[in-house]
Amino acid sequence: MLITLEQLTKRFGATLAVDRLDLEVRPGRVTGFLGPNGAGKSTTLRMILGLDRPTSGRALLDGRPYSAYEWPLRKVGALLEAKAAHPGRTGRDHLRAMARSNGIAPGRVDEVLEMAGLGGAARKRSGTYSLGMGQRLGIAGALLGDPPVLILDEPVNGLDPDGVRWIRGLTRDLAAEGRTVLVSSHLLSEMQVTADHLIVIGHGRLLADAPLDRILAGHASLEDAYYTLTDGSALR
Image 1: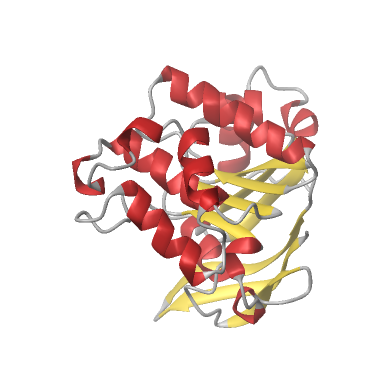
Image 2: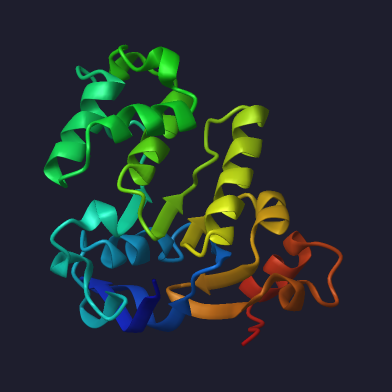
């Protein structure tokens, strides 16, 4: 399932947050989404998911906007914010409500809780979860509909080393199954060992859209390549 951005633009008053982005995120690979704070990454993800309306242009999932899908969780799983669940609900009840809203079998809830390492915490209120547990619950929610597209914003935030390794393996396994996996992150070292392809934006504009090895060419590390790009050089 292809994510396509066509001249995607977003203004907030006089501020141009996203500036005419044209790109495709393809299945079968982990695509890293990088850029400095304020570059427009979160706004772009929100427009893909129909949470922000573009000023102009459009974001499409296999040629259709997110809002056009009757059961969106079966098409796109997303983690945009840790601990987004109601603090008074248990982890299991939070996922059950999500499943019910999208016609997903109740048995899938326990499957994703186990996948996320939360089987033992399923009956605890999510308000008692640590940041890392909240991340795991959010990822479980993203996996709930067994979707062909995964969009994860800073998925390793708050996770311990075992959790980081789990996310790394999970994203690569999902991509190997032919899914579209888009991961936004500030952790350049993690992206260097996880991503197959990178998209880099700055001030809302596209700076790079290329395979990892091409971006790394001539650089000692992704960090070096990234700072070259965000200082004004562009690789297309």
